Length: 307
Ligand SMILES: [Zn+2]
Image 1 (spheres, rainbow, N blue to C red):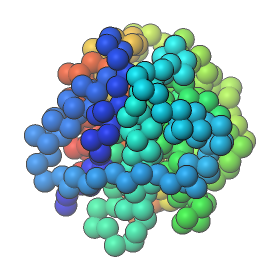
Image 2: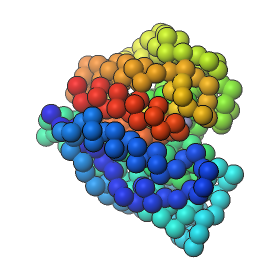
Image 3: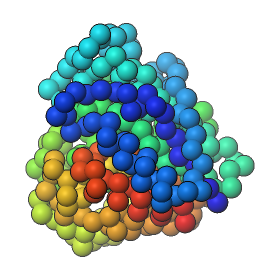
C-alpha cells in the first residue's frame, strides 16, 4: 500500500543563508532518496495550517513574528533561527502537512493510516511563545492539538528521537494528560532540557544519552524505559518527531547511531500503533544535518513506516 508523503516547494525556499546547518539541501536530499527508495509512495502537496490550528498551541505574538514580519532579506529571531522572505509560507506548509497527515490517519477510510511529512523548518524546539533552534512553528504540536480538538482523541503519543530534546513540544504539553511525550536525546547538548526528572503531569518521559552512545545503548534505553510507557498509555495515535541527527555522521552531535537503528525504533512504534491505534502513525522530519546520514536514516524510517 502506498505511503502518503506530504511536502511543499515552499519548504525548499525557506532560506537560512550560507553556512547554516538547517539548509534546503537537507530536504532536497531526503526527497530524492525517498523518490528512489519508495517509488510507490503517494506524494501530496501540504496545505497551509490555518490561523485557528496554529493558535491551539501558539500565541498571537509568535504568529505575528513569523507571519507578518515579512523580511525583504533575512533576519535572525535568535542566533540560530532565521526568517527569510519564504519562511512564513514554509512554516505554514510544514505545520499544515502534519495537520493533513493527522486528517489522513484519522479519516477512517485510509487503507494505510500512516503518513510522513517531508518538510522544513523543523518544529520541536518552538514553544507556545518563542521560535528557537531553527524552528518557527511546532508542527507536531499543531498536529497533536488538531487530533485532540478535531477528533476528540483522549490519548496521543508524541515520540521524539531527534538528538536534541524537544523542549518546545514538552513545554506545550507538560500539563496536558491527553498527550504522552517520550524523548531520547544526547545530554549535555542544546537546548539543555530533558532531564529524566522532568515529568510534567506524569505524561513526560525523558531519557538522556551520553556523547558517543551507540545504537545498542539507544535500543536498550527505548526497550527498557520508553517503549513500555508508550505501550501502557495505549495511544490512539502515534506521532513521531523524526530527527536523524543522532546518526554517527551528524556534525551537530556526538551519538553513534546508524540508519538501521532508526528503522528499528520505527518498527517498534509501528507495532505499538498496530496494538492500540489501528496502525495510525504520523511522522514529521525534524533535524539531521549530514546529508548522507540524514537521507539513509530517513529511507530506513519510511521503509519501516511502509511495512
Ligand atoms: Zn536535532
